[in-house]
Image (cartoon, rainbow, N blue to C red):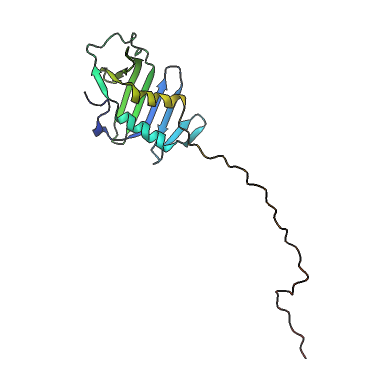
Amino acid sequence: PGNLIPAEKGQPTRIFIQQTDGASLELDKSTGIWLLNTPEGSVPAEPNTVELAASNLLSLRILNQITPAPDLTAISLNPPAYQFSISMNSGAQISFSVGAKTVTQSGYYVQTAEGSVYVVAAYTLDALIQLVNSPPYLQTPTPSPLPATETPLPGATPDEPSATPQPSPTP
């Protein structure tokens, strides 16, 4: 069956994940670096974590298609547990909803914007869903205070001859 997001759609430039309970995550790379958009404003996101998430999106493997579509309420797709909205650098917009895990816990029920219902591998989706609960803030090291050192005070040194040349008395 392949991947949920076909390779020809390009690379993600914006990732928006909305949880049913209202928690959400928005990552945006339109400026060239991944930013985490928060209610307080945009802050740099941890690039390795987000690049991994972006590649996970591109490798969401379809385990099987379910036709006809089952009762969406029974598999938590009505309403969905999560809604994903992704903007790609090709201009494509991709949206899909994530429902319950399968009985075997190996996949999630996913419904595409077109209405198709698939089972998608859980391990890649779990990593993406985890970002909503622990956003990938860029961790900057906390500055530690430097040890106190004695700083010599500049003082007058009258014993040494003056470094400034003095005019010599004229005869």
